[in-house]
Image (cartoon, rainbow, N blue to C red; front, side, top):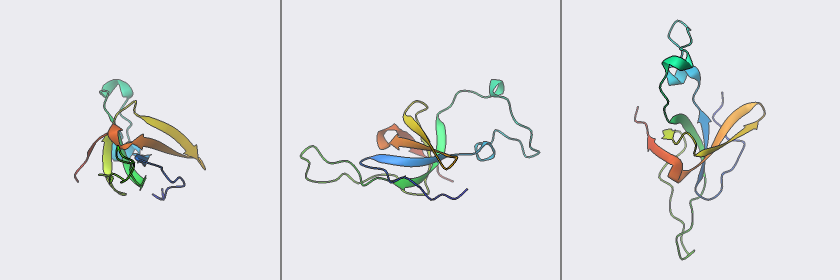
Amino acid sequence: MSDKSPIMPLGDRVIVRPLSEQELGTVSASGIIIPDSAKQEKPEQGVVIAVGPGKWDEDGEKRIPMEVKEGDRVVFSKYGYDEVKIENKEFFIVTETSILGVINS
């Protein structure tokens, strides 16, 4: 799947491509799917494919720079995103404050 975003995020929003089952490690190397009952509830994970310009400071004079960048693999709150589907591809729109951390590879 191409990591090019069909959506331009505004403000402090980030477009995230959710990780596939294989990228998440929920499919074994031999292709066996690990059932949901064997998984623990965890935050969501994905790859940042687009980043907004940042939100304005309290005075509305200066933009606050974003801490994440395109290509970052992130963990975000399970209930802190909006799901959109464009051209049969699923994307999440996440505010930067809903991103819990960047996964170091």
